[in-house]
Image (cartoon, rainbow, N blue to C red; front, side, top):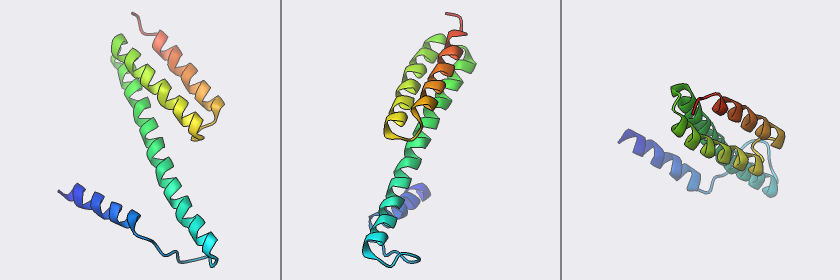
Length: 110
């Protein structure tokens, strides 16, 4: 019940038309502050989802279950590719992560 109340309060705060206090005095600058806050929240959620997928893959690797690891590998690679496409990580970083995941997956006997 408490989680629901906290989530509801968060949603109510995000949906309200907020007045920006502090540095910006110009209307467009105030709008940029609000837009940046929204984008930062969206990026934070996307990064968290990416980390979750990578943790699931790591857990499957540590178990040594090849079929589960294959399934988690596909999900993790897709998540990394989406993160690179959205600009959450550099394309070379994404390629490096995928390469390391592939090497770890191939060490598990079939």
